[in-house]
Image 1 (tube, one colour):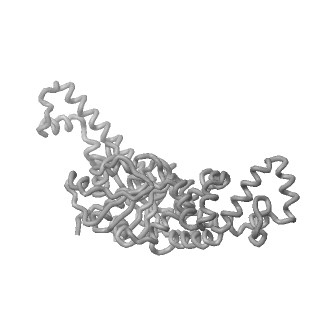
Image 2 (cartoon, helix red, strand yellow; image 1 turned 120 degrees about the horizontal axis):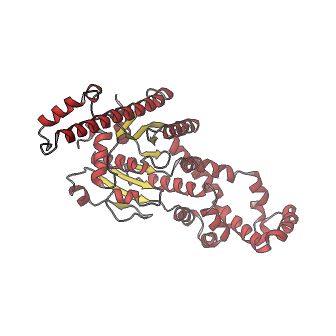
Image 3 (cartoon, one colour; image 1 turned 180 degrees about the horizontal axis):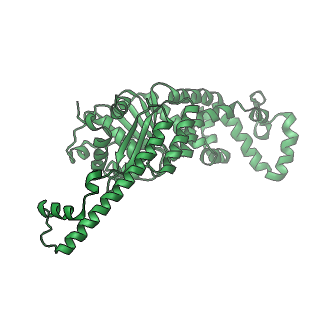
Length: 395
């Protein structure tokens, strides 16, 4: 089975496809193309992004995306001659809103308001490393559980944050089990106590001392946060396990998106290794903007006089050119062809390094360099015909 067929099979069979990679390599475009292809093939697909930029919305031909799922109107497809057998939906995850959603859904009513209004929670949910990524992973899991979509395609932030996304459920589980946290908070001490009463007698002296530096009000907020948020601990720990099980399970796959430049491929390999360490299935690599030679090597070595001859006989509008201008044009065409051949060879060599570093069973699919940016549904379909080629016919 070739790389195209392997990738097409993943898109047809998986429930979750996570696109990861460094910034600026076409991750959002690739996510949208995979979702578009699945919708064309008859699946009900949701593509969601964590990137607050409007790239996904622009590519899908709509003004904006929100934290709610939005269906791409069928008219958008028909305008460019497409008739999808399935449905394409999109969503932009607001990670702060996603964490609030977790609280609203799982906290008891009497603690819910106190948690959402607590200053420590507001810092915790917006600024603490990994918390927003966890909230996004949790939201992904919730959408998966609801079962409204055959396939969910996730466009993650650049590499470092994407790793946070993968590791966040485990980090949260570890945090809940952290001995230091239990030292600060002992569930059995809560009954009938408020404020700093959340802390045990043995730790009261420590916090009294700390309050001299931080202020009693801050510690009061902290203890209130722990007291109210504690009701979520066991539930969060269990759900963290489920989220991680989904991301590492057979229904999910990760696609590493990269570019042919050596630095991008090096980062892609690093990511591939990290995913392997996390026991995550890597479904394949998509390499965007691969440069190709536009004439074969023999033609690129053609004498300039032969190029002039071919131009004169080609029917192109060159009759108005003087012999000197025609020779100048021929020379520039030859130089361009030779340079494109060199660049194509550089990309081929870089990709071969990647090929040798990974299993031969892992597909590498190339997307050629396009002269214009891909920022429309028509552009996505152009990339789709390249990425999936013979699989672009609707059933």
